[in-house]
Length: 336
Image (cartoon, one colour):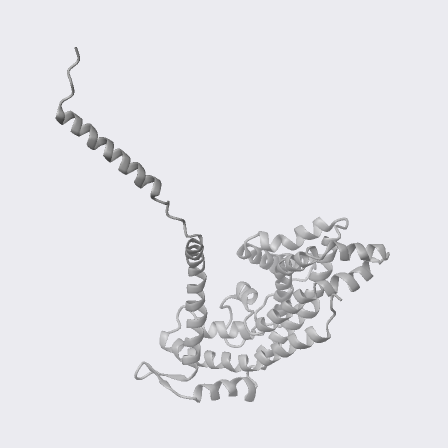
């Protein structure tokens, strides 16, 4: 015979049953917290853009503001401090536009700019079209032209210097050949040719990408009209990639004052004074960087001059850049 449950046992089971019913009702009525998709996206975008925004503020806005500040200062060697003055602009203006001491720099930079614009850019566009049409031996062109970008620039420069200084005199049977002598004008044109080769692949990729983005319907229209390769290039491809060409020209105008990498890679700090290969970009770089034995006080006295020169050239180049862009867009070929 089973024992009857005690009163205490019945109370425990009653309380347990009440607890289960209350808990079940609470779980049924409780709604899960919805995920705020918008806030998650905003958080992702914030962290994604944090680094480029910080980089822009520090290395562009900060540097530009400091450059503007330095342009209105002069270094006092006695007190080791900067003080406000407009004399920096006067000195920079006289150096570049009155005394004529910088005529060689402007001439070399102009030659470098014209060579890249009127020789380098047309060659890049034509070779890009050859690769785009996949003509025979187009892959050979790509290997030869991409070689400077595949090989380390330092290794490439060392190989090029060895070829020019030791290989060409033997090949041409002329031991007096000195194409990389920093005191002879031939060094400038030698580095100019190698610089075009080293920069060729970058422009080639840009123009090739622009050609690949041309609508297939447009290309098929040219084929239906039985256009020759020249007419297809002139009337179809060139107008389609013209916005890319305009961008390249604008960037080239800006590089007029900053392009120095190839000359510094070949010569570094070799020579003294105003060398025949000197450009505006290399001149400004050497003024700011100095040498290993250059005292810091001497460099600090040059910072305001370089800053003022940069502002003067910006005031000249900015209107030219906007005017060039306006004329090219207005009178250049269109896709219509």
